[in-house]
Length: 308
Image 1 (cartoon, rainbow, N blue to C red):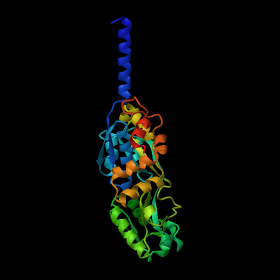
Image 2: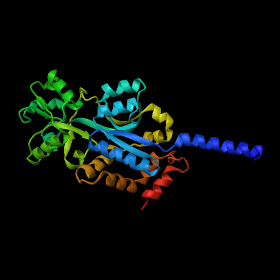
Image 3: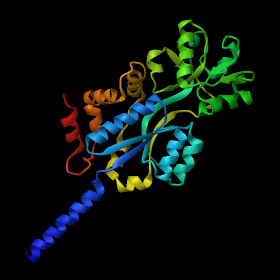
Image 4: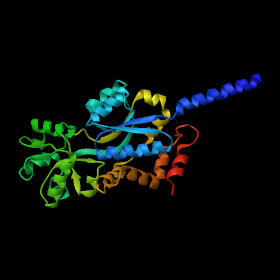
């Protein structure tokens, strides 16, 4: 072999080595709290990553365990962090550099108290209106699992008589049980106030209104963030780029959740059908993203799999 040939071979090998380190196929480990929105959102991300050559896995657990897993490196990413309601846990991890918040994956989320539309039309527009109709509500706010931030917020409001809520109580339950109760009461036109959020199928199935919160005890505007482990992000910038560009408005995600949670369609079917019908939006998420081996634009691979 000539000296030039040896140098060319060495240069080619070095280039391939650099390419391999940046685009090496790897497993992306997601944390997933037990919420329908998090389930479908994670599945959409997984379907796209697997279609461009990555392996993925999901660890299901409470949101606090998930984000600690990302911070400690046992998990790589979490697409379900709600701010500001989870601020007390998430903010210290972000400020200390243990996690990176890289995308507002649901920029128009909401978490607040809701009432049926017929209650809103009767005059309950604000949390400050609840005390005027305490008997109609049986002094009860229906919540979800004990310890959830929403429950805690309202318990503190009651404790400090914020919005004149002294004497009320929060009824904890699972999200499914709370919504079953709400659905039953709404069919009977009973008055009920409960925790509501979007994205979620409740916004499609039920005619509900979010109550105004002038004292901002709920922290104002809600955003769902994607978090990634910084070391993983540095090693796999291609994955980070995709996750940093994946943004789905609440209206889209509520439909995902409705198809999964109410129509009982399998996660893989919900994600795959949506991707196939929305490649224009997916192409925005994939700008500058390559396949796992670095040899092809991600969208070329996705179109080959998902185009009609």
